[in-house]
Length: 381
Image (cartoon, rainbow, N blue to C red; front, side):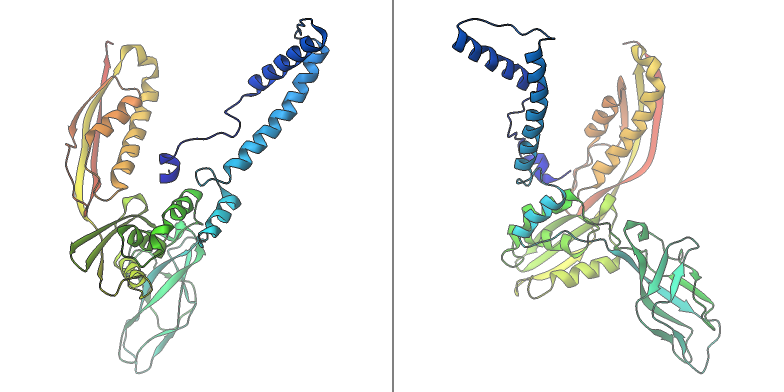
């Protein structure tokens, strides 16, 4: 959900009129004008031809009203979408970020040292056995007398599907390479992104005025950090001492960033066009504070026919809570929200043993641990 759509009021260019209200207004206007011209009252029955004509006209008029309402809303950041939002972005000098391919580092190895170099051509493809491939970004070679070399590689497809392959998962060489015995990725694949969605672009448009100077304000550092990679979902900026800036970042789903991503953000924020000369900028992953979920919940007797549905909804509520809890750096571990979601799922009451309310500082992120959700049975209302 965008901060803009959450924090600004709804508007309507047609005063939220319904088709029924429009129809009734047309009939009332007709009756009023008829009496003005004839001095007589008139009542239109449900099957009256004039009423049917007005009903047909109402449908066309109301459709035009809907178009007018839609067109008006597309001029506002809260409602704009698609190409309309892209045009609002152009007014601020930014554009929608396109899909990006994931990256990693591959290590090619041989068993025996040779007195000559073993070439790894640019574009050499590696996979984990599925239909997703990573290709080396540049030419590399295992030098004479050595057994291995590392080289960066990029997924041949854009999108998030290239992310989160753990070290060692990419281990199948597609191209024929003489002498090379093994290959493996040494870092978790990262940086793949789908084309930027409307909510993300909407928030960037809203935040871009912070960047009109250099990245002095915390809002500017937040903007430029998110701009450096589409997988970054939250940023916290701290100044422990004058001239010192520490930027904490996390990725989508509350994941901690890999070292390669931290380096990428650091290089972007330390660009001379972004960083004030007097700032020393450090990029870090936040500290982890793990919490476990342990509770027992009960269902009211009046809801026993829906017990299966409620139990499934409780499991979903746990997922929603974990997602909410881990999406922001420094968000306190708050069992009250867990209770709220479980009650909304249909439980009569819930006895939460863990987590307990824990205050986190702005350099720490909550991370979900074990989950023990016990169903206590049916209770009288």
